[in-house]
Amino acid sequence: METADVALQLYTLRKEMAADFRGTLRTVAAIGYQAVELAGTGGLSAEELRDLLQELHLEAASAHVGLTSLQEDLEGIVRYHRTIGCSFITVPSLPPADRNDAEAVRRVAHTLDALAVRLHQAGITLAYHNHDFEYQRLGDRTILEILYGETAHLKAELDVYWSHKGGDDPAKRIRQLGERCALLHLKDITRDGDFAEVGEGVLDFAPILAAGKAVGVRWYIVEQDRCARPSIEAVALSLKNLRSMRTSNKPESSAERT
Image 1 (spheres, rainbow, N blue to C red):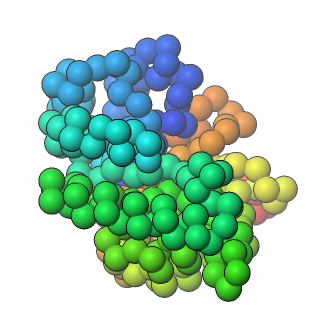
Image 2: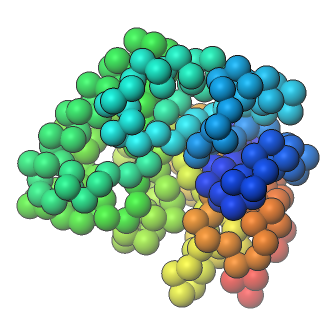
């Protein structure tokens, strides 16, 4: 894994982004991130955001876009993201109505796969980001198994925290998904199940990163849903630990393992 393959999901800094979108992006670049995953655009036009990212030498690795938005304005979303040079769009979750039973999941899976085909024609890859509810069993398969069993074109943005929380082995799941696992969300988990910076919890990232390398993961994306320390410090620490893992397969320090 090269540092250039690491991005930051900006949802982690949602309060800072809401207060000062441009200034927070400058801080992200100064920390050392070379790419971001968008969770909103700060009200900027595509041209304004493109120019800001270029100024800061930041790449738009991916963007979280809701399924309803994709269904209602696919052409506009394609234009915007092609302008900013973003080649991945990720659906961040499924609404409850689309996951009540196996048939509902099959229907939404077919919808996602059809959207993936249309986006591919425009040069954009569609992925899906899991939480832990996808490990709920509906009949003889989990929601996650239905989603990927009923699709051929949809890629995965596997969230290793939620995968572990759902009772899965993230490294094994990455290898099972194979080349369909194009993106990884990296966050750690404390012993009591809360969110932690990468390398500061109990997840063993060595097999996760090895599996990612084996299947050709394109982006390793740092995210924290909730931070115990100031968010800017948290994302800087995750990047520092990932850099250490690249050379030593373990972070420089891990409070949770001592």
